Image (cartoon, rainbow, N blue to C red; front, side):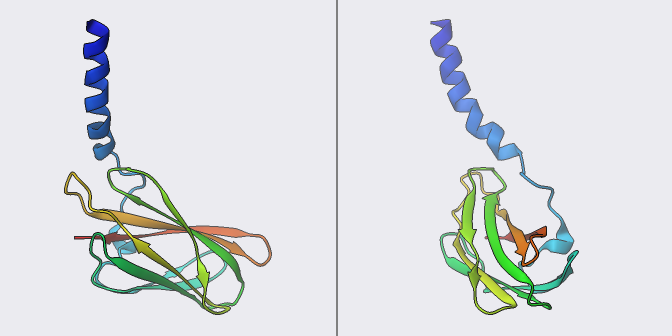
Length: 138
């Protein structure tokens, strides 16, 4: 009986523990919820723009516009504050300097609304960069 009670308790607690952890540290200066922003990377400068408003269960697009045409590919990973699972997307190449990703993010059962998108950038010379942008999906 104790084993059954322990199993039920673990099954109930695990989802609530996941709500508490944000997978990466939120940074307000990287938040593109209300305005587009420009970031300086090791090998390039990028402007990130978004379709707005960002709402749960509604499609939106992030567009990354680079100063230099030295980008080979971008892999995007998004996750919610409650760490409910990763969502991976290959960036769509629009031109030599522009990539985009279209996403649909779910509504968090806990009511939390912060999301991030991680961009793993691969340059033509094989070097890489990683950057994050954050947004509030309400």
